[in-house]
Length: 372
Image 1: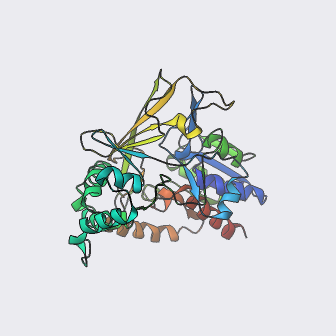
Image 2 (image 1 turned 90 degrees about the vertical axis):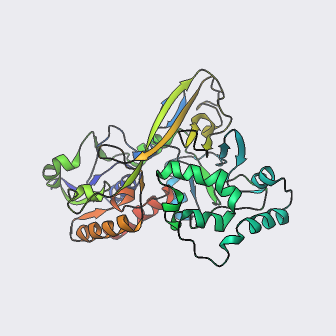
Image 3 (image 1 turned 135 degrees about the horizontal axis):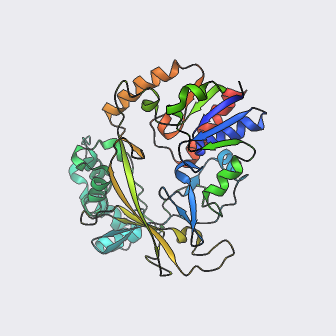
């Protein structure tokens, strides 16, 4: 065998495992179907702006080990995620906080806000929520649900909230303070120079081949390595023989604008049903509107995001983790466990939505177990 490990996928899971294996003296080959590394955190420099090509990614974590690990490969800026919501032209702060409650109801104190929410969710007292709508009302009341959750969620999932399972929003960030920081995390920021630069450092010294469709050339590539780390869709690995796992996909309409400031914020969610896209990202504000030399940028780049049902050929983004799909995944997982020389990992390999810190954490653990 030419390699100890063949790693299918150059995203965060694959790059983390590859870095750990190389550090331990293993021969590693990383392949990816795309012509770029970094998976969905890939950033492309356009007009001096690091554009999040596959959607906004803000790194945040409470995990000291992951934070120390990833800081070997990037310096993080002090960006704080403070999205806003646009509901038919009305602007609200996210996460739900005292700015939100003040705009909605004219309240000025936490006591008033708590009383308002309590009265609005009273109909759900002592009831077990049967769907997402009932779950949301039980957490934040009717007004917030109507303006900031219902129509946005239905655009995102392509289904009425009454048909979506309650567990999708087990909890919602509700803060009775004037704080627009979306993440309650110890560490938060964006890699200076973009995520692609960070992943390049993680893969430094590792052989990488891009534009390679592993499943089309599986027999050929399986002969090259003793062990395989597979981060693609697990159902595709098995030829969909038990059925197809469902995803939501996202389409991006990205454009360069000859203005220096389009919306005044990195992330604006459009929570009304009349706007066809779910949100608009203005990428320059992830790095405070400046280029790598600290110069203010005269142009801007925006991406409008459209959510839709996944079909073969689309990029799978969000697993539809309802009872039917989770049951099917468990059957594929059982098949995967019989593949002695294959580790299935990451968002697609485990049919699970991961935050970036979590996927790095599980990759570190998998590498530790495999390489010990």
